[in-house]
Length: 177
Image (cartoon, rainbow, N blue to C red; front, side, top):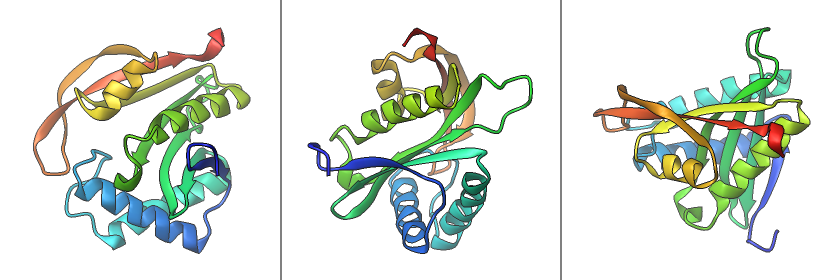
């Protein structure tokens, strides 16, 4: 464990026990109103299907998966989408940042974000792009960590509860350090 009570590492494949933990974390996040592209109720079948699909992309190298683990197991994750069109070899999309309720407000999200930025640099990427619910916890985290807010798109998606919400687009230029 780190001095924070968790460690962060990259997975190059997802083992069955990790698949179970990632599935449980996705269910926890969506069923507690985290907007990750899914509607409530998040079922084990839908959550597992998402992670099985992501696992294939992780194994092929088109997606990088970082996880945070504490004494109870996986407590956070973030993904870098590396498989982008050929005219965008310099960038990656940061996606599906999630932190289990048991680990929130302890700095796990911030550490995952910093680890994703380091990994992107190591992969030769100089630009990261993401979107987050306008005014939400994630948007505040990204803004507070120096990501540049491009703008808001109203009525972009549905919250897990089915209400329309806006999204805020951010980018991070990694060329400066």
